[in-house]
Image 1: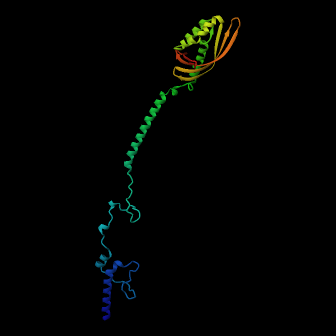
Image 2: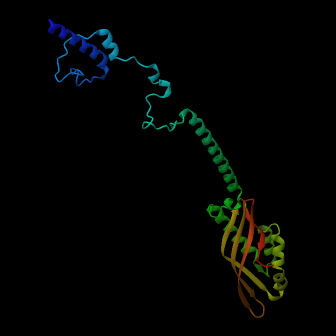
Length: 260
């Protein structure tokens, strides 16, 4: 009888200890009773449902639960790192700024291109077609070579021929320049029976803009005296002429002999 009462008291004590120490027990040693003298007995009794369950499952603390609005679940780096998180700019805010910058750049480029094109159009060197318009360049060279040979040739036997050539090929101030350059030849021609012949040996178009051109002319001149003693002298000449095109014909408008 005393043994049975002792066994009942012992089971009561074990149940009370198990109920108070259940949260501290580990899952690896579920049957070991703290405070036992050395042996272990299988826990076959049924634990009280009220006290043991309440002691085993703690109530959740609302203050300890993370707030989803506070960025729970984001990677904040190592524990204890209190540096502020870098917030990436929103794509919706960057797109208008990029479009505005692109618009400004394109507008500036368009203005620069328009100004540059206008400057190129107004630059006389860009309008010069002496090297690009081969047909027109050849035309002005041929007609001016013919004009120079005609107006700078003189025969004492046919003085009127020089006047006709001057009226055909000369215009502007070139008319008076031609009169001054041949004045001495006309004065000496009847007495010395002079025959002046000019032949163009080469020419180059320096500038060709529309119906105006400037040429550098190289020519050979022969001056023959057919009096008592026939004598011929030769000379080379270089000069520039300004030409204009009128009624489909190039005429000499000015003569530059590079002398002051």
